[in-house]
Length: 119
Image 1 (cartoon, helix red, strand yellow):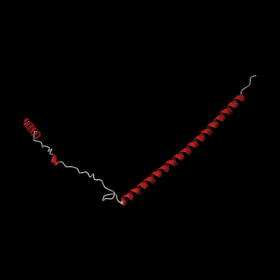
Image 2 (cartoon, rainbow, N blue to C red):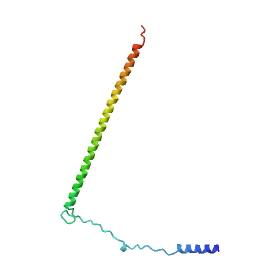
Image 3 (cartoon, rainbow, N blue to C red):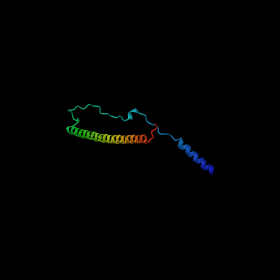
């Protein structure tokens, strides 16, 4: 019984594997050809850019230019703020350095005045 099922299954697989395949038709006449519009359009002919479209383009470009100007202003402001902070930090560091130098001088003066003189 097991052999019979195996034989039937094998026969079925072989029949489906050996069935005739559909051939691909390579006929050039049936190919679809794509049509590209390569005709030049004169600016005065129909299909040329209308006045409304040109106006919208100019308006959008003006908005674009305004947004660029705004971005440049923001960058300049950020740079100015950063420069001011750097100057303040540099001043603080200079003051701290001066204070530490003065403290070192005072300590050096105190140690030299407190040291016993041997003559």
